[in-house]
Image 1 (cartoon, helix red, strand yellow):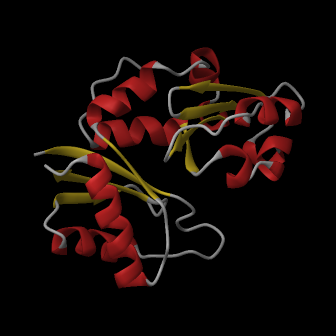
Image 2 (tube, one colour; image 1 turned 90 degrees about the horizontal axis):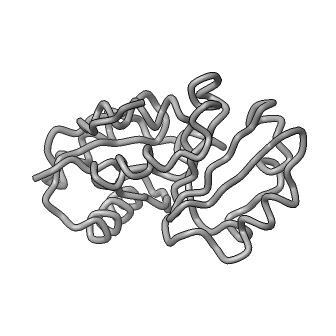
Length: 181
């Protein structure tokens, strides 16, 4: 058994809600151990021996059964999460303004052309990089003001979910991931 970090796409945004206590109860009913949530932000950490893809499918099915929600789940192991943290292409920005660095974890990888499309939308010093299955964003004026954030869609990028640097590190701590950040 090892920790698994589960990220839900669009949870508790845009009216999509599933109470965290009920998410934890669902995880326990699935046989997942020690379920923990991070705020009400669509993050669940559990202990499981299941393979990542199998756990993703099981979690998505359980969310639909229990809450009637078709929500994509992205599952990462502690080792995968440590690699995400180490790959941050904006370390100085993350130290200075962690809420303005966003890691968008993609379910099936970054869609071809997504990086170029995002760069074409970038304004006001915004930057974007693709590393492995993560799109990284630097939003110097905040995500809510970003032209990329306002115009980029799953059709353009692929299916993914973003977490700011603060949340990335909090999830690491919750899952016992060793970091140097």
